[in-house]
Length: 363
Image (tube, rainbow, N blue to C red; front, side, top):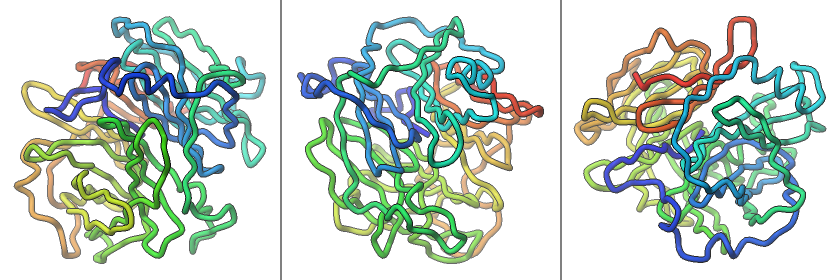
């Protein structure tokens, strides 16, 4: 759930020195008090953004991990058992909520819950190419915090009784000096995209987003974006967003202005009874693709060139729009990120339930 590491036209991750000078130095030293640790995304200079939906807060953390290193494969079997041993709990008390790769050091970072339920402790753990795990100490570290002003209340429920607060932050990506945040607000049109300037100087109410959901045959404003990636369409920066059941929708980044509502273009319906889990963009043999992990439809390789040629879906439909293929040999993928321009790092759940980290060549 984060910005791809792969350069796509002019739509690039900002590497060290590309950010406004002194921006990391504006962060104050102190403790990071995570109520939850969900979506992760890296900015420049080893800054890690962490979405904390329980507290309706986004943290920017200076990991200090800013020494350049070549990418090396990360392969670690039973990472959940190793996390449990590190954190002093049983394996079934470990949840890995997200995965992000530092584009400078190429270490992996995991958002981990130690325990289940409201009393679970949130921990950030790094993994290097040797399989060494290290807890990122949050007691005294340079950090900055941004609170969401209009997040759902702590006790807000949807019609199925699920917490809307836990969907206040569903995904993050750092783009051109700004943090793009997907999730729900407490507004009438709850599905929201926020564009927050970094260093954090304030957070506005964000932009309400509306889409046509072909599988459901209706316009929707309350379903959150589940995962997204930045992407350029006809030289204009966009967000490619995936929703449950599974519309793929584009939004021009320039339209994310506070207090407005933007209507997305539904480029594809990729199949219902499915929840998208994570996405990454990559380039292979001169063509661009989106690789998307799903809860019940496997890993999809989606054609990403020529998206402007697809008319927006505005009528009920089954699978339609942008073509894709299912990568049959990638099973059980829970999270993924780009390790370098040729490899993806996957968090995979085996048939026995164990979690493994695997490096694979982009398909």
